[in-house]
Figure (cartoon, rainbow, N blue to C red):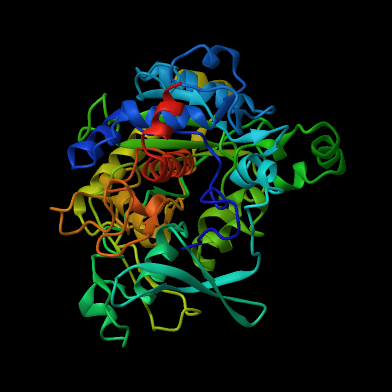
Length: 494
């Protein structure tokens, strides 16, 4: 599991796609006992940070303008993505704003980019504020624990190491922990906040016995589903490494390097296990595949064995191809984050527990079958598009394209989309699994909040870049409301 680091909040390792999730996701949060977190309330915060550059979307009630984050389509695209959204329409799904009134449908992707480059939260929010006198940023600092009085149960400081030296910063009012869904639970447990049976075994004094590190959820995707084409219309590394392509990006802020993490098209569908109002599968369409870099890097990142690569993908190295990655939107499986030791410099133990619930893999198999049907639609025939049919060596005992084959394929190449959430779950006081209350205050500890994707009780139906930013926006307002009271609420309304 790769985790974000640095000062870019939780988008540092995201594909920067702008997806809000589904209305039902946030209405569920409120039904779980979290007032103020329903769709109508959170939509305000999604729009607050957005500066959408699409003239049509600007006029709808679902998008904002003038926010800190520039949102737009990539200035460069292949004809494959146009075919992708048209194919979705052939299959009965409209081409629509998937962040609008309804989610089920297909769309050319939007992301947080500005002039062809990532518009990160650091660029959007931090740079304009960097000269403020009340803002201090310590780079290359590793937080080791929070300082909490064992008598008053109140957080009063943060311990961290920088350039090999231990340093402490104290807080007069509150400490806000925003280290993400892996490191926030790690820091809490190192500080004595977590499952008593776990942290006490490591010799850490228990401050508050909470289910920190439970409820880990993530979007898992099926990799390696490859479609070949007969025309030079996809991203092939040998072709796009040419000097003119690089200069096109540097000088004109255009070209294939401006794609949103390689993703051009998005689709949301419902399988036989879902419904149109709450799709259960998301598609990432990319004009490239595992073979597109000739085996240089992608195979290593995905952990593909030599046998699998040499058998299936090497024969089509540097060939024009495209892919659909089906993502499981709402997994039933739950994982955990636990301390390896009480040494804060040791990585925690991450057990994603993918496919522990068989329902998850059944749903993803249905997504794979739909993706194959989509690739066979009329609009793709103009490119000679066809599925790459060399079977995986370990799946040859199953008929290619059968449910059993796709299950074997998924268990061979499935991957995180780097969307971990839920490990410091938000919930009411009556919820024994909750870590923070609906105002994001840690139960049993004063002066401490968690504000990041770890507080999400359930994973949103879509990439978590925008939802994590929304949590930050709303969390900031909660702090101001609690400290400024009615005066702040009146100024916000005005």
